[in-house]
Amino acid sequence: MSTPSLLILPGDGIGPEVMAEVRRIIDWYGTKRDLSFDVSEDLVGGAAYDVHGAPLSDDTMAKAQDVDAVLLGAVGGPKYDSLDFSVKPERGLLRLRKEMDLFANLRPAQCFDALADFSSLKTEVVSGLDIMIVRELTSGVYFGEPRGIFEEGNERVGINTQRYTESEIERVARNAFELAMKRDRKLCSMEKANVMESGVLWREVVTRVGADYPEVELSHMYADAGAMQLTRWPKQFDVIVTDNLFGDMLSDLAAMLTGSLGMLPSASLGAPMANGRPKALYEPVHGSAPDIAGQGKANPIACILSFAMALRYSFDQGDEASRLEAAVERVLAAGHRTADLLGEEGRAPLSTSEMGDAILAELD
Ligand code: NAI
Ligand code: MG
Image 1 (cartoon, rainbow, N blue to C red):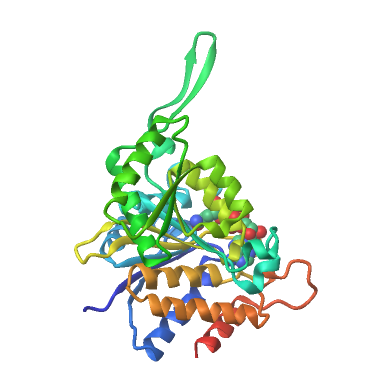
Image 2 (image 1 turned 135 degrees about the horizontal axis):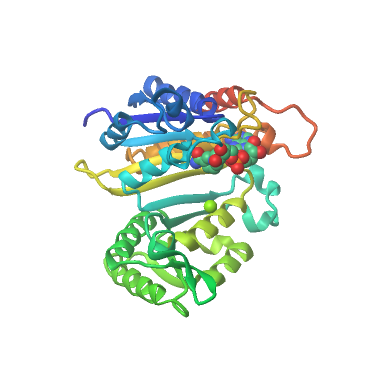
């Protein structure tokens, strides 16, 4: 098999700082595990705007289409706030998602035991938690037509349309079932079939796709009840699949069960390429954190765990992904903390590169 290719787009603010630690981990895999990647690096966001006058050049877009996986840091910052909407840093990320047609957004919510008492929920509710939310990312109410603000009689009306085709539901459902097969074989689908026709169709299509996965235990839940169950006893879930709107909220809710933004990875997957691998973009959930950029304070773990997801979902290296996640777990268990994981505690935090050092030492 040819060397897997990876395009790295560090972006703005803390993006390049956290990505530098990922680069060291990629190098470690090359020298210590004989697992090499054909790595290229390019510009996105404000960094690309500064050079090309656009937040993503056509050349970079073409490269992204060509590699096995893209790993992105973060984009944006106050320097670019006054730019026209069409060239804002965020547009670079949106272009990647749109042109790569990344329809399945994977948001894990995993509780590292060392951080369980950092959660706003009781320790026993979150300790050992490991769930995955699959959010449909390219359709639904954020894209449906008609949309807009219109005159109606003597007042205005704001309209958005929840719209899903069977094929849109089917592809994200299939993706979620495939994931469930690699995990605990439990899938819960969430919609509002009680009040929305799009939810009725969603439930019907997910059930039909489920016939191809008899090993997966499928259940359905109304999304509002799902929100309650996620806060009451999240460990009842393994994989959750839901639409764009409900997924936006439920994935943020689930992520925060486990603590800091500096810990949260994500993946956005599209259709399989010629080599069978899905089109894929991996990125931390956090943004460019201008308030701490350039100070060596950023937690690199979200970006490092995003690379672990790439190992698992793009490079078929599930064991190596687990190795990296276990190293992170041990580093946290040993008490190593960047500033965002310390809260009000008075002790000195690790810098970004010291956290990288600690994880590399554990990998060794
Ligand atoms: P943010 O995620 O950048 O920061 C929110 C808060 O969390 C800040 O206090 C920050 O210091 C902290 N934080 C975030 N990541 C951290 C890390 N790895 N380690 C330690 N602390 C961390 O969100 P904010 O402030 O709303 O947005 C800042 C900029 O980032 C804006 O320009 C926004 O548009 C952009 N942004 C980009 C995203 C992306 O690239 N995917 C996502 C969200 C925002
Ligand atoms: Mg959101």
